[in-house]
Every structure is written in C-alpha cells, then in structure tokens.
Length: 132
Image 1 (cartoon, rainbow, N blue to C red):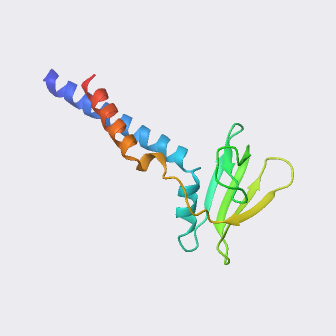
Image 2: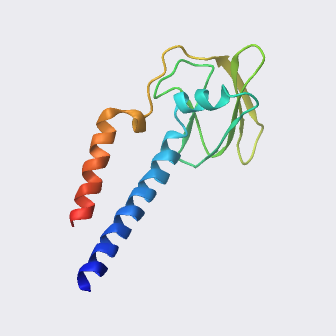
C-alpha cells in the first residue's frame, strides 16, 4: 500500500516539476528574436509581451545582440509589415510610445529549449528529481 502512495507521489512531483519547468522556459524564450520572428512569420500573427521593470525586449532596428534592446517596463507588440520589416510598438506605462522597425535578421540563434545540450540537462534533472 505504501509503495503505491510513494510511487504516485514521485510521479506527481515529476509531472509538476516538468510542467513548471516548461512554463518557465516558454516565458523566458518568448523574448528571443528567433521565437518572435517564427511567430510573426505566420499570416496575421503578432507577438505580444509584457516587460517587467528589469526586462528588456529586442530592438529590430539594431543588430541582434545582448546590449541592443529596449529596457522595460511596458508592453511590446511585434508584427511583420507588407515590406517584410519587423515592427515593434513599445508602450511604457507613462510617456509616449516607441515605434521602431528593421529587417528580419538572417542569422538568428536557436532558442535554448531547442538545443541538444538543454534537452540532455533537462532529462537528467527530471531523473534526479524522480529518484529523490
């Protein structure tokens, strides 16, 4: 009887940790230029983000890089126009909105969750959580 309870608790903790990790990772990678471009390339789609005080969003008018961004807080909306330009409308809580546009970058880095190294680390973490 206790063996079934322990097994159910272990499987439940494994499922919760996996789901929580997936949600956190999805939120973190939603700010990635690759994910933004993949989303807005679909017809009629926009990519909306809520940026925290310490957050930063990708500025399409500058080359992709860690220091090339717009600091939050605010709301960011990305879309692709008819000319193939990536547009960003950034609305801070107070002040005037900012609109910038730039070309779709050619070489975009893969998001972390698609990398082989991350998948291996994720599987090992889940096995360790299941064992303890």
